[in-house]
Image (cartoon, rainbow, N blue to C red):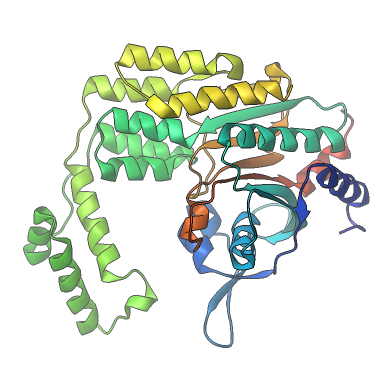
Length: 373
């Protein structure tokens, strides 16, 4: 690392030392299942998979958040605790090779989520300002929690809320989901007993029917989704096809996704939207306003920070704020992060541990350092 990025590595390590973090190293080989289950479709397609001698599916680490959280759980360390890292990740990429360096901070266990969110944005901004002196930065914020609160307030059923929440962070997926919501697809090609079980919403009966069919075909559940997962998905698809959002509700959703304003006016913009649409966003809006104030208190340049209601990041584990930072006028993110309050429980923590973090792409930073500001 030091031979490729000496200045960046030294500067970043020094910054981490001033930010009350514990430097951590995690294994290059990781269990694959957590990434396959929780990392999001975009990352899943680019993971390098392998297998241990005992048949366990492993992967080269494609990011640091999940490994850092797994190590925290296994170490039974107390919280709050802040971890910093700097090392290689491995992804199949279309540009720039399959190995590249990331650095970042994972902030676990701080119950003051507004302050922890603000600190994460401020830490990422400080890191980029340090290694890219003189560069103006552009910070884009989104909020998974606000988006899900809007979906719930519009009265969308659980299946649709889940699909849209999964699509948040992928513009093509979100547009496809909205198109289906506006014009639900016709019924699928199911027939006979399967169609009847799906129509009745009989999860147990449908699971058993699918299990029998897989057994007759000689298919193992371990080779893919288990019967209950397949059944649940079929019933969910049928429910999605049965829903059509009213014109008023659909227009409200589109209006929400069109909000793109400076952060210092974002809470007011959301309040005005909610009032105009006759919706109550409750605690989600209160958390948003508290976070905006906390970010302002860190003294970041207000003109560099915007809230884009349609902005998300393509990782399934985010639950609240998401953000990216780029050079002003640049197309590629230099840093990205967000809040993931459910992740550690899903990874096996016995109690809920809130978390937020970010990572930076060192190869992209180095490319900018080679050009004049």
